[in-house]
Image (cartoon, rainbow, N blue to C red; front, side, top):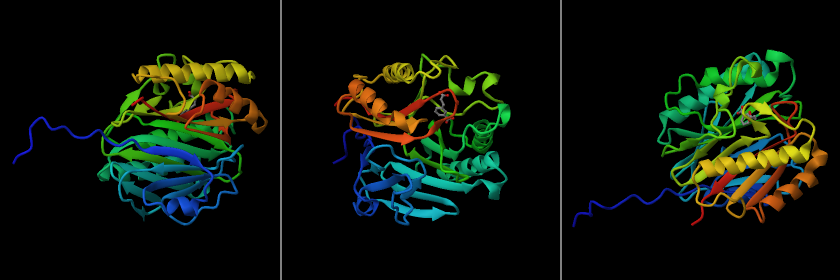
Length: 329
Ligand code: 3EB
């Protein structure tokens, strides 16, 4: 008997993202684990393409981020790119030594050329989300600031990637003195819908004062599984950083930005809580308790909360938050 023509595809599976304390070795033994990212010098990571240690120090437990899919996982290496794939999703990571490539801009260009070529060639050609971590992000003045050089190389490396739009992203400074650019990300079989924030100028339209090459990312990406992947979000309104030196006010403004993005994504219930996982990057490690308290007041019993020491790409910003948020039901 032929199947009815009204038959619809099941809704794609939402990637499960959690934060954990379980040793990485044990997490990687679970059959559905697509990726484990370990944070800080003490995160023990086995040699596995699904595992990446990022040099951002965790400020409280936990220190592992775990991605779970709903299908058998395959993994491998392709040059300096490491990847794993399961069902609709691809995890990939690349670490690029800056000196070996002639500086941060060239390292970023290499990373993006490599990862976009790899993603475009596979069965999961839609780039949804990227995380970028580099040492000393605010070093250098004016247009020679390392973040601006990174933006320049990233844009050049992405240029050949035909499958627009820009992915959601985070770019944060490590404080470990290791001049290796670390990039990891998520691609998928199904395209996502980029979401911009009505309170903010789109990053790729930032005016010249922020550098010669505007940052190439979307504020958020709504996946085919109705999961909102939230880019690094800070106290930026329009294109301007607000509340210099005032952590509490920056958290308030960031929270307003997150709510506005979730609303724009059309999620039925945009309140953050059990269906959200949030990661906060703090310029000053001593702010950890204050930030944890402020966030758990606003997002009661979050699905996960991870606090990391990290520098935001504008030196006046003290805190940045990213994460994921699922719709109800
Ligand atoms: C901002 O709103 C803050 O360059 O990939 C946030 C998220 C920021 C991603 C990036 C930068 C990036 O402009 C900075």
